[in-house]
Image 1 (cartoon, one colour):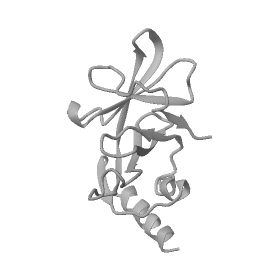
Image 2: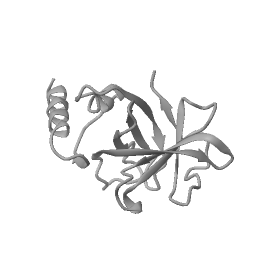
Image 3: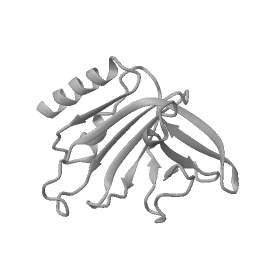
Length: 162
């Protein structure tokens, strides 16, 4: 119950104020549901939700949830390290980011792919890029500013939540 109240308060805080914001909180998440609850719709927008694990050099991976507004103008992103085993002194805070979204058409040899640019109005070092390829509408993978895939492994993708 305390955890639910905490997440409701967090959603209320995130729903107000700045157009782009980052929030760090210390959390004890033990299930997929408690992690994604913090990102539930709080402003009556409809979102497409992608979830998965992205690589981490000091941990087993980063549990990631990306929500893309169906109007393709905004996003919500949450990330949390999965394990403390390889980083016993690490902070296991969940990192939340909200901001503006832009899209580009085409990636490498796929002219109909979509590149999602998170925080597109900010400097490149604050942007994140994800690709949805033609025929793979249910998954995204991350690319760098050089437009190369960051994670060569096929299993480092975010899958669309049904």
